[in-house]
Image (cartoon, rainbow, N blue to C red; front, side, top):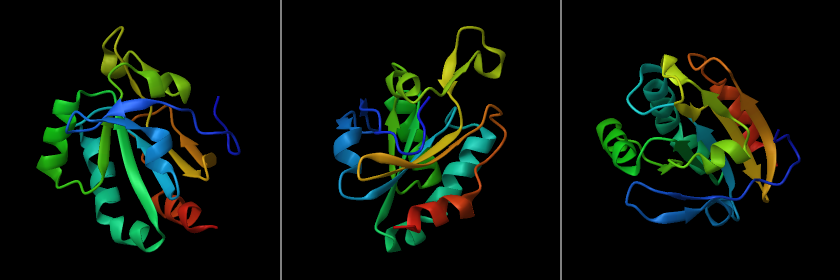
Length: 155
């Protein structure tokens, strides 16, 4: 299990433009909020991603960025991003590499036996290390957005 103080696991994932993105490079030099979500176009996930979207000015003022990650395809993530005006990167973990490395696999998601999604989770990365960790087993529970902002702003 990934804990506060651990090195961020390394993975390369595809963005919505089908470009391979190294998480290590994407977080370098900035505080980064990694927001894992179970599925694009689901109610709670849409609300969560739109809440992060609406908070981007706060994160930008802290020199922090947000990267969302789901197991959905880059194509579904692109449609989700466009439909909701998401103003940050969404990465596809379609092979579940990051989900496994961060130990946040949500098995049998939505009652679909054998389907593995990401648990709803937020990690803040500073200087390549995890500085904040929040994970829920209940996909209907959202993170405490003010706690995430506060953790992202602490130097």
